[in-house]
Amino acid sequence: MSSSYQVIARKWRPQTFNDVVGQDHVVRTLKNAIARNRIAHAYLFVGPRGTGKTSTARIFAKALNCTGGPKADFDPKDPAVQSITEGMSMDVIEIDGASNNSVDQIRDLRDDVRYAPTQGKFKIYIIDEVHMLSTAAFNALLKTLEEPPEHVKFVFATTDVQKVLPTILSRCQRFDLKPIPGELIVQRLQTIAAEEKINVTPGALACIARMADGGMRDAQSIFDQMISFCGTEISEPDVLDVYGLVSGEKIAALAGAVAAGDHRKIIALADECDEAGRDLVRLLTDLQALVRTALLDAIAKGGRSDLLGGVAMTTEQLTRLLDGLREGEGGVKLGLAEKINFEVTLLKAVEASRARAIDSLIKELAALADESPAADATAADGEKKKA
Image 1 (cartoon, rainbow, N blue to C red):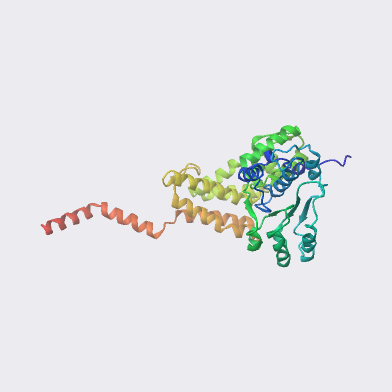
Image 2 (cartoon, helix red, strand yellow):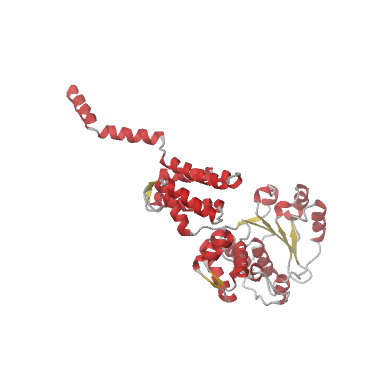
């Protein structure tokens, strides 16, 4: 058996700025910085997992140390670039912040930065998960980070920026990478499928993108697993069965039953999903996303939406429904009886959507009183007395 197999997430990792998906604001800024020779000494990439932080850092390193660089449109086949891609470059040092977080290791780095690069123009340190560094390690890095030698560039990546010391943040240019939209994930997976000669239905791709939650790497890993399971033909039911997802049609049906207050249908659909081994926590998340879409639709249309099964609901009702679903999250995730907690959450959310706020009731009663014949008669009597 050949040992040269690479998982899709590694094989299709972005190699140039043009390959980066969904982070146009970051790519544009970095390209402009290179073109205008305004390259800072320290950068911080912040964002959820699998959105391209480390990949973008490597691409930036390639742009800085390519032959004739810095230049954003470097040749991927350039030997200097290929050495960085293969992890063989002596001038691009990648450090895992989780396992190299002691003050002694950072002191070694601080001593090492004094030496000039061996091949490229810069010596580039990429520190992944930088928030894992200890406070002492951060403090040991401060002075070097503020006034590094001209030939040194730092690129940090983190999923938890709140744990990075403010003194570090103030010395870096910060870039926030956002979750990648589902449609862009689907487009990228379609490209990969075409190159890998995999037939995959649009419904299957949509399910994979939904599961990935904005992470391209997660989407590619899921796609890789589906290829192992299905071979070259992947359909939506395959993805639903492997990952315990509920189809979009059934989610819509459950949302419609909740909007209509149809208790029997709610329980029947919950039973059906549970018996089929579906992930009820994920179903609750998908249901919330659908209710949120209806809420935004109601806001856009002036206070009412019929996206949930054709049932007209006001902004207030949808807000209360979404809040009821959100409040039940903890019980469904951590409770001992997942199915019971799921059913109770849905039924409570139905009741919450039908409750009315006291202030809105008072306003409606006051409006009705002003419009009633008795109110008109009282007003007329008042006018007569004044006369």
